[in-house]
Image (cartoon, rainbow, N blue to C red; front, top):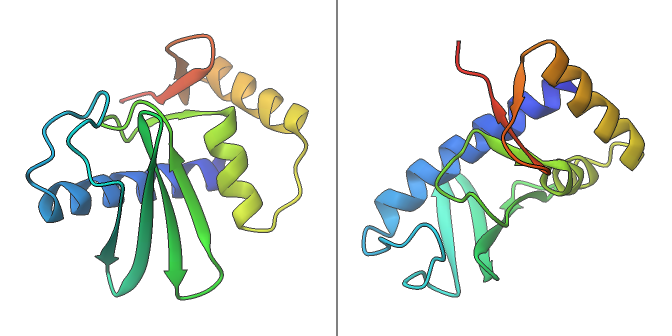
Length: 129
C-alpha cells in the first residue's frame, strides 16, 4: 500500500504543477472560486480531464487507459496531503482490492512509522525528511 501512496502523491504533485502552469489565472486554491468547472491537461503525453466539485477537483486520466482517478476534494494546494477517500478512489481506479479497514490500518501504521503525519481527523501528510 505504501507504494501506491507514493505513486498517488507523486501524481498529485505533477498534476498540481501542470495545472498551475496551464491555468495561471486561478489564484484561489482554498475554495477554487476562480477555477474553471472542467478542463483538460496534457501531462507527459497523457490526457487528463478534470471536473470541479465542492471545493476540489477530480482528475481522470483518459489516455492511456486504464482511467486513473485523483480526487483532490480538499487541500488542493497541498500535493502531499491525502485521506482515506482520496486513497480509496485512487486504489479503486487501479482495480486493486482493499477494504476500507485495510486502508485505515495502513494509514495508521504509516503514521506510527513516521512516513505520514496526521494533520486532522481525516487528513494525512507525507512527512518531510
